[in-house]
Length: 193
Image 1 (tube, rainbow, N blue to C red):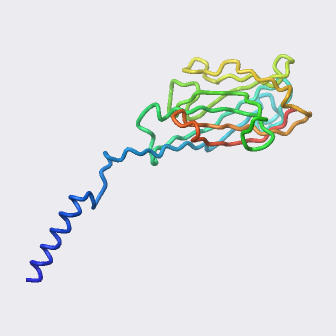
Image 2 (image 1 turned 90 degrees about the vertical axis):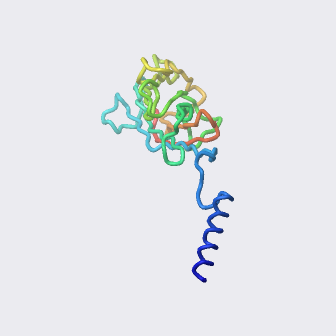
Image 3 (image 1 turned 45 degrees about the vertical axis):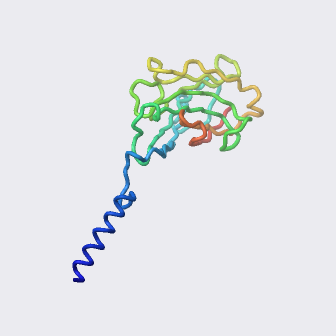
């Protein structure tokens, strides 16, 4: 009798859990998203330097900047292509945070794991410091024959460079295109001469 009563209670409890939606989740009803963006590395190389790690940038030097971005939705690559898009802005900054005092030297539209975008999981640009004797930074995408390349993005350094040599930070700020408040930031220190 006790065994029959225990089985009956077990069946009733299981029935209540199923009818109330307990006992598991239905992922098709889960419409929330946890898309995140991360920057895991930054590399700044003076292509005219004595060594590849030379971070002293002289007039007319060409500087190679790259970064690695990852966009995940709950640990996986987002299903929709539009969720894989991000905007990467590259600044020169006196500190390690983005502010109105920083000099924007590049503004790139990117897509992770893209083979067609100029800026993809790894964003790559080259910049020339004091281009043609002018007080400017001029930056270009490494993949100019791709979708959305950065072409001759020029920024005046006149107001930014207040002394020579100047120690500054190269900041890369990457923000999701679908949520511009969802950003990641990474920095690397250089010296402008």
